[in-house]
Length: 198
Image (cartoon, rainbow, N blue to C red; front, top):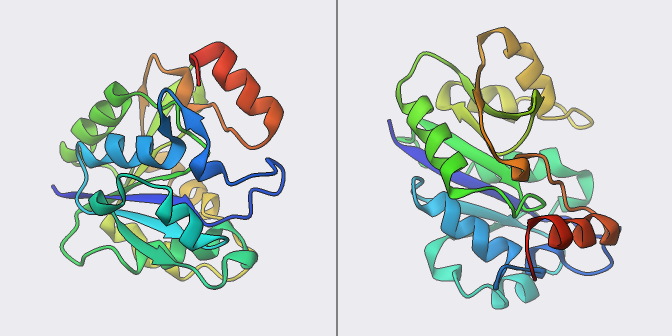
C-alpha cells in the first residue's frame, strides 16, 4: 500500500520568532530532516509552505526530494494548510503520513514502524504512542482524505481523528520525539538539551 508524506510548514512561527522549518537540529534544518525521514517510506513527500515560502524553500538543501505547494490562505490556520497539501496527494496513494514541521526529533524507527503497520491494512488511522500519549506523525488511509477536505473553517484535523478513534491502531514506540512539539524558544532549548546538539 503506497504512502505519501505530508509536512505542514506554512505558519508564521510567531512564538518562535524565526522560521521553524529552518531551525537546526543534528546538522540539518527541521524541514530537511523530516523530508529525509518521511522520504524513506513515502513518495512523494509534499511540503506545504505559506509564510516566507521563498526563503524557506531556498534554505532547504533537500528541496529536490519533495513536492512544494504554497497555501496562500495560511493565515486561516493549520487545517487550511493540511487541506492544501492533501489536494496535492496523488490519486493512487493508499494513505498519507503527515506531521507538522514542529516535530523534528521523530526517529527513523518510528517512521518505519508506522509505515509497516499501516501497510498491513485494517485501520483508517495508525498513530504513534509514547508512554501512553499519542503523537506525530500520523498515518491516515486515503479513504479519510475527503473527510479532512470537507471540514469547515474553524475545525481541526483532530475532529476526524476523534471520529475514527475507535478504529485507530496505536503503535507503541520508544521515541519521545513523537511528543516533542517545538513551538517556542523554550521548547527548542529543551529539544537540544534532551535530544542532542544543534
